[in-house]
Amino acid sequence: MGELLHRIKIFLFRRDGAQPQYLQLKAKQGMESLWGPLQSELGFGEKLEGAIRYHVRADLGIMVPGQVLDLKIPSHLNFGDEDVVEWSYGYQCVGRLDQELLARHWSEFRWESFPTAYATMGLEFDRQAILRLHSDLLAA
Image 1 (cartoon, rainbow, N blue to C red):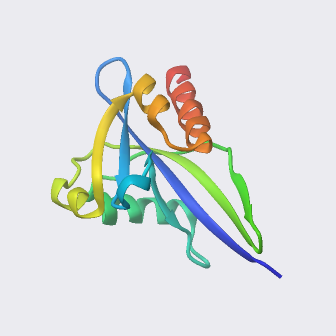
Image 2: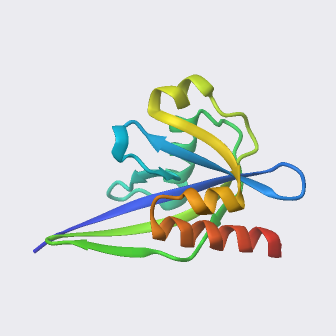
């Protein structure tokens, strides 16, 4: 029997004028690193919204709680005997990012407009999720 892992992907956005901007992160993994959202594994018994708020606070230093949006597009990946379910959420950034903390965790980070964020996301599932988030934000 294989292992089932749950992962959360958190697409941070902020409203700066008429169009939202999206935070893109690049992990410290050398040349193989891709632009993407904040992500983490979901621990056994951990609640999704609590985990999202924890990682936004612990990994980015954002202390002011923001709005959490369920993007309602989980993805399922199979790697032989390992199954991974990814849960995608949007998170409205209303506080300041901790620049020192960001620099410790990621090789690069930036706020981008939707066209740039969409085009530079490293994985197709991430592009689908940010497209859903952007559509939801414009419809609201």
